[in-house]
Image 1: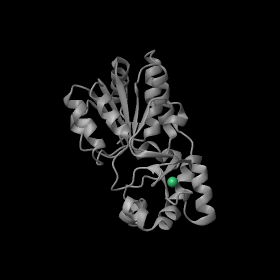
Image 2: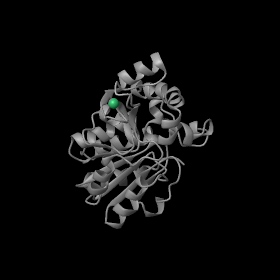
Image 3: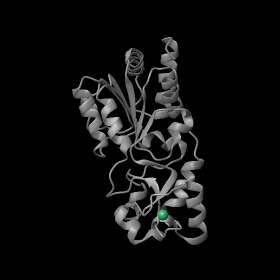
Image 4: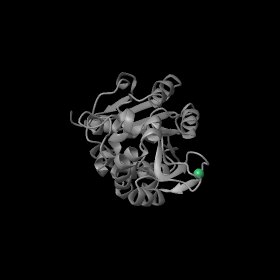
Length: 253
Ligand code: ZN
């Protein structure tokens, strides 16, 4: 479906009127930066057993398999560059038009685009920690160890796990903060997520029930489209470009 001009105009107007807007983003925001959507059909999950290679149990059982599967992908994420969607959200925050971003992405691209308040509910690829002593390590050290010895290990003997949330683990404390903040949101701008991963998806019906305006921009339908005030179906980078232009025309960006 093509992007409709009036839907863009309406979304731009709602964003201009909002006083406590939050963005909620998922994998679709990063695909234009060359990072594959791990959960989409034809994505990585079709090639491997996610439970084994991406669960905390699998990590403890076969750390070598985890590192060999994930480390070069994490490194690829570190080398990716933010796209127009990341930059639009950072700009809106910088102008005081948006409170911040809640993201399911671990690539860190929102921060690198300039967003300052970013809740990374599934963690990030900047660092890791020892499972035994909790000692912190930069990702470069984990990558180096993995490349030279197959695994990353703390001098205390514990494995160093990147700070990403694996299956079987609790979400980061960022999720609790996002849950609290969005209770006070008057607008929730959902981008690039199919809203099927819980409990993150639950932020949307809750914010809507508490009175927030909801804008959903995603290529595919989501379970909450019917509750949304505006649905923008189309390429996200194009959506960001049109929205940025509409906000400029309206004198708001
Ligand atoms: Zn340790």
